[in-house]
Length: 436
Image (cartoon, rainbow, N blue to C red):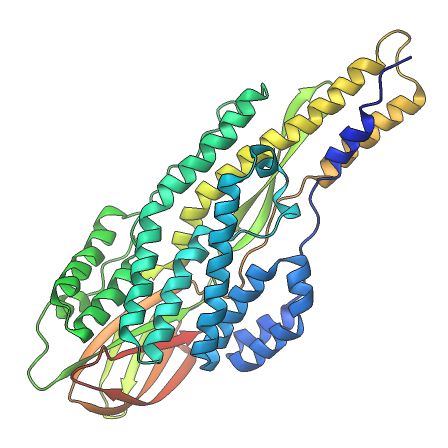
């Protein structure tokens, strides 16, 4: 009599495969693309239960926080963004302390844990919220948190990769030539630019000069992430503000960050038995916006210049995460395929497999393939590009027109920002947003 008592346990392992997390929020996305941010937020809330069930509360909090701020709900936004930040931190702490076997389980069966690029930009947008609320010191705290997280990314990914590789090795699984990705990103020019503006506004000259240098260092040491020229307005930022004038700084965002898609490979395990490797990759979303022009009602106008591609940094940091996800998928899928190989070996003994045993083997192989799905969950409303610029003005109240243009100079989207108060003793930072 063949020893097949272990089959229920094997089938239980197979049931740990992926599940679909796709959800339709097209109405919210359409309203967002029209610049109707309040309606987009309301539409998102209508999907709240479905989003939490299919994608997790972290994504719900993050998306809600990114949309509510665009409708002027800055305090509410910070509460929502803080909640998502806390859940990312708790998920990472859990993954560090968890048994490695649970770490290998398909990510679709776990609560969404967030990505590094989402985590570092949460603090940037919380900082902008605090600036809208007039709380400059709190804004600086958030920017410092973002910068600190950036410095720890490489160590975080290396630790995770070593754990997965060690587990695979202990199980006798070779990852072949698969290597973890070496992270190139370590410093955000945008975060340092905002830190420079706020430090100057509160009179912290040392931090102002340090942050100014860090912007230049981000461009110099990470040319693959900053393939465009450093904004020419940075020359002005290094100069003293003319007497009896104040500096108005603008930061503008456009586009949407990349989306996750599933990539699929396969690994030969045994005759007619392949392990499906499914892992996520980020795919960039293109934007028509190539220029940003700011006009004041007195006829003054100036261009904003790119300071950061949030998309490029998302893709770069996610390469390390995707590499680890692939390591996990290789280990998990190979273990499942080896289980089938063992079953085939046992049933091929003596008189060979029965029709029922061959059918069960086939079913297990099909189930292994179908159940292995990449985790393609992510936030939906992080912008793609950041632009900055500045102008020296006399203290007073100003209204701005911000025109987002395509390559040919045609205005695609316009934002009117009324009654901006420019003060000698404030940071004087204004934010604009284009959803395209």
